[in-house]
Amino acid sequence: MAEVQRETAKKPFPVWKEWLYGTGTLGFTMCNSVMNTFYFYFLTNVVMMSPGFMAIVTTVSRFAGVFYAPIKGVVLGKAEWKAGKYGMYLKWFEPISRILMVLCFVNIQANQTVQFIYYVGIFVIASFFSTFVDTAALASLPFITQDNQQRVRLSSKRSVVATIGQVLYSLITVKLVASLGNGDQGKGYLMVYIIYSIVAIVGYNITAQVCIKDYDFYKISGAAAANVAETKQPVKEKENIPAKIYINAYLKNPAPVVLFLGDACKASASLVYGGAATYYLTYYVKNINALTMFLFVANMGLLVGSWCCPLSVKLVGRKWTNVLAYGGFGVCLILGHFIGVGTAWGITAAVGAGRFFSGLNASIIGAMNVDIADDYEYKTGYSLTPFFMSMGGLGWTLASVVTGGIVGGTLAKVGFDAAKEVTQPMLDAMLNLMTFIPGIPLAIGTFLFIIGYNLTDKHMDMVRAELEKRRAAKAAEKAEE
Image (tube, rainbow, N blue to C red; front, side, top):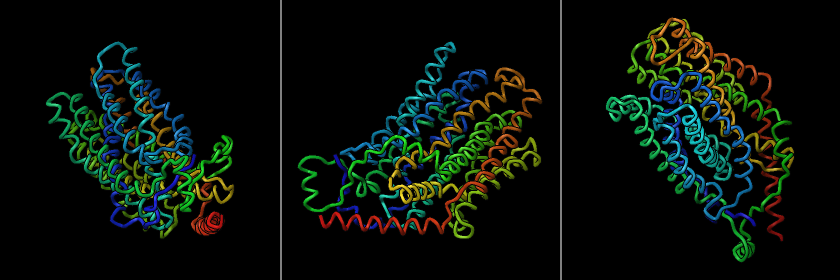
């Protein structure tokens, strides 16, 4: 078996499509934001789980994602589809994952055993399909264009579109939950998630049909393969890459390890304060409506940071842009512990400033994973781009595993119960979950990037030039055959 790109893949990727490339991330981000902001609260205050049991459910349900990450990388690299190597996942896996994920917001009133089986089982199955979708979109990036500047633009605009989704989410979600729920929060979360899921499904279909389709790889065999060979159309032969190569690609390669751990640290911080925000504003500030302004300012900070990302990369390079992103985010959250405590404006200002720094590297993570893949191909000859792109999401997956335990465990330690009166230790715990606790992983991420990331811009310019020579020579050899 083999794969082939259509003749349309020879055309330059037009500028007008660069924005459409990130269309799917708009709804995808809005769905994730609902999950990150409200799901813990939904389980404790709607389903009425104890914080400890909620921590167990969310930790176990997300643990499967740790295994999905390397599996999807291998599958994306090896699987061949007539419907398109990458587009197929966007068109078919996304609807399945969203339909299943909607069921996570169904209020199941039963004993703990039934609740555990239901909420863990649904989330694990939904995550299996979901994990392929955004990774497939990212993995198509190096095949859409060989121009490194355009890759950075695509990655940056994709991040900006995702952030626009977060800004839109912040403006309408609280009101939508209230109006669609009509006094029933659980129903409100469910209806909102359904609406955002439809946006995600439509968006990824646009990305697949308009942006990826012409540049995708399609499975061919038999007579079709012979016809392609006669026309000397470029064919991608299926590689049998030993499992140890995939393992060594990480264990003996510092750059992806640092990027993975740094991403895990930033994701942990975001998920902890995001999961705690609803509790903090409901109980400490006593104004859940302040969540709209909190989310808006936070996501506007991220949007501005994403816009500034290319400038930061130009001035200080990708490594130090990441250092700024982690370090600045952490400092702002820690300052939030002392500024306007117990008020909505204090924590909103701190998180908004922190998210600006967070946005500085949000739009280059995809491009950095392409750098890592190119560097590995330069060193070993193995092309593992889909694998590295899939592992790029492992940091977020690992963070999602531990953050439910952090939020739930912290609240359980101080005896939080949605049915009981809130005490000062509970309020202090909520404040710490918004400031000091997420600041710790950000400090770790900053340190890791300073000492461990070794792919400089100068080195990558050399790598790309050398790979272009190798690919040109290989293409010339095949043409002579």
